Length: 505
Image 1 (cartoon, rainbow, N blue to C red):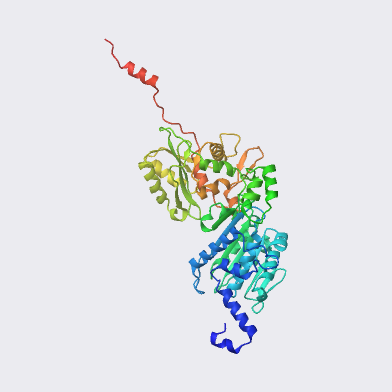
Image 2: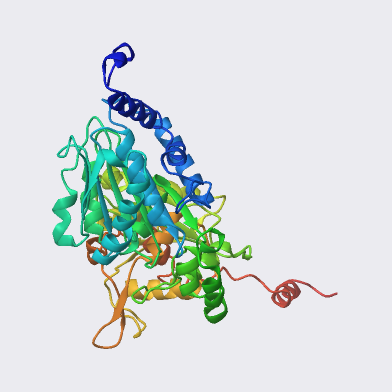
C-alpha cells in the first residue's frame, strides 16, 4: 500500500488503483456495504431496475458482517469458523449470493483461498461458477482477478490468492484438503449441498483450523440425512447460522409456477416443502420413522393418568464418542422429564454410571419413583446391571438389542422396540430437542429373507456420517416390555371390601 505522502510521486492510474484498494478493503467487515458499492445498481444495464440485492440476501450479508465483527480476526490469532447454512426453495437467487460472497472475500482479504463445489458438474459449471463469472464482470474490483473455467485468482498472486471450482465426487476429496490461509481467510462454499457427499464435508473441515475460516452451504433440502441436513435441521444446527427461505417471499422466484405447484401438489406435499418452502421431506425411502410423525409428536399435548408408571430407558456407552442417555416416559408422555446425557468418555469406569443410576432408582425423578428401568445389555451394561441387582434394585431389566423378537414381524428386539415406538409416536408426546429428532429419523431399514423388519446397524449409519442414535435407542428401551399401571380399586370393589368388615346388628 502506498503511503499518503507518496501519492504525489506516482502516476494517476496507480493512485486510482490504490484508492480503489483502500475503498474495497474498508468493507472487510461489511459485506452488505461492499455489495451495494461494488456493483452498478440502478445504472443503465442489467441492474438498471434494481436498487440492491433481494431482502433475504441483504439480511444474510448483514448477519455475515455481524459474525465477522464478533470474531475480530487480527491477522494472527485463529478465530472460530463463520458457518452459514441456508435451505431454500427454487429460484431465490442463491447462486447470485454465492457470487457476492466470493467477490467480497476475494476483494477484501489479500491471499484468501477458497473452494466452491456443487452437487453435479453441470450445476457447478453452468449455474454456480457461471454466475460468479457474470458478476465478476460487473464488479468494480473485477479487473484485479482472472477468471477461467474453474479458477479465479489475483493477477499478481496467482498461487496464493485464489479460489477454484471443484467436483464433489468422493474420489476428488483431496482437492478439499490442505487449504490454509493462516493470515487470511480460507473458505468453502457448497451449492446444492444436500447431495454433496459427507466425505467432502468432512475433508473440508480440515481447512477451518487457522486464520479466519468460513464455510457456506446452500441448497434444496432434498434429503433427511447427511451433513447438510444435520447442520440445517438436525444435531449440529446450534453450531451454524441457519436459514430456511420460502421461495414465495423472494423477488426473483417464478410466482406463477409456484402457484401451479401449490394447486397440483398441495402445500403439505414433500415436493412443495422441499422445492418451495425450503423444508426437508417428511419421509425418506429408506427411513424407518418419518419426520411428519416426529413433528406431530413434538407439538402434541397429552394427558396422563396419575397412576401411570414411570419407565426409564438407559442406552449405555463404553467410552468413545457415543453418549450414555437416560430417557423417561409415562404412558404417552416422554416430554415432561428431560433426558440425562453423559459423555461416553466420562464413563469408562462403570462405577460412574452405577452411582448415577443408583441415585435415580433410590430418589426417583420429578417426585416419582421409577417403576422399571430397562438397560441395553451391550457395552458396560453387564457390570452395571449386576451391581444394581446386588444392591437390591430388582426393577432393573437388561435388554439384548440383538435378541429374538417375540413378534415375528421384527427380526430382533431393537427392531421390535423401534416398531412399538414408531406406532406410539402417532399419539405420544416428545420434546423437540434436535438430537432426539435427528436420532429418530436416522436409521434406515430393510426386510430380511423372512420378510422381517431389520433396522440399519449403527456401524452402517456411521459410514453415512450419522451419529449413533443414543437418544432414540434410550426412548425405544421404554417399549421393551409392557409395564402395567398399578391396579386401582374400583368403587364397586371398595364397597364389597368395606361391606365384608361391617357387622350388622
